[in-house]
Amino acid sequence: MLTQQFQQALTECPLIAIIRGVKPTEVEAVAETLLEEGVRIIEIPLNSPEPLKSLELLARRMEGRGLCGAGTVLTTAEVSAVKNAGGQLIISPNCNPDVIKATLAAELMSLPGCLTPTEIFSAIAAGADHIKLFPAGDLGTSYVASLFGPLPKNITTLAVGGIDEHNMAAYWQAGTRGFGLGSNLYQAGDNVEQIRVKARTLMAAARQLPRG
Image: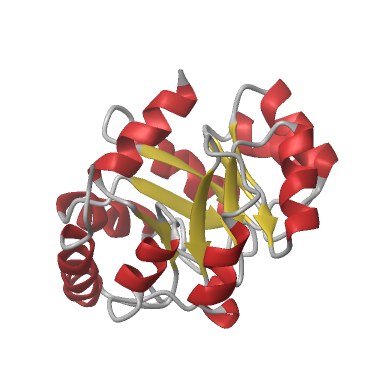
């Protein structure tokens, strides 16, 4: 069920907002601005200030409107903490089979970070069917496209790191079907109008991506 919700949210908007550095006092206004502009998936990295408190607030704000979760999740204990805070997505910068298995056992969405075919297939073997290609911007589109040769067709890949309105279409053409956006969409301390301007620029690029 959660996988279907994630795919639907990704279909509506292929952008995942990574709001690293957001504070509990800011998170609801930031989330509301992103939701108003069409973003449907929001991630709070665990190296943000009081991330679980922010996640609790975010989960309540987004209920019935989209999905949220935590990034930079490195341990199975953090998986449990994220679930208790109301998070639905477990996003990592690395491929840790124990974290993937704990995520699926908790009935949450797993998005492990992978860079190589070995890591991708390790993630798949652990049960992941969504892969975060990170850092995708440093790899280049030719590298990303090459990964899709042996990759099972049911695996959804998301490009994260160095993606903006200028290269989004190229990574889509290479085969990725979603994008994690950090500082190009939100930087700690941004006010709502700064966030809105960035979101509109990136959403305009997303709307130009071919669908179907």
